[in-house]
Length: 198
Image (tube, one colour):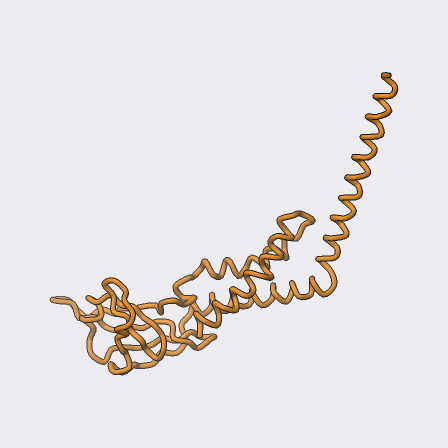
């Protein structure tokens, strides 16, 4: 009776070991399949694209491009949009929201638009403010709904494919991060670049 039980344990143990070996082999084959061939080439393309966009948008945020004097008439207040205590301006198709107090105290004909150095899009609106009993001071307003307002969160998210590529391991998190990079971060990067930068 005791021998039968030991034999049953031995057989069960062998089956468990065999099952573990099969699972390990299947995991290894799956990992090799997703880190080679066309799938891996596409993922590397996503890594390069997202990394470049993170780099370009970071440079655009940190450095200024050319400046251009803006006529008062070019700054149209958008009456269809509301933003509490702020004027909503449409300047060359870009949205800026200076505080009402600052905007009403601006010095006439002092408005300038600063463009980004790489994408050459409107980045910030600058103007002088005349305060009571004090000298004129310079004021800057970053564009709303753009990568300039979302720095550095968007850039960190864009770098997730690069981190996934660098720290690739035969682990479930790697496959999850790879899939997330392909179906969420890559299309999200395209949307951010299209809608927020241009």
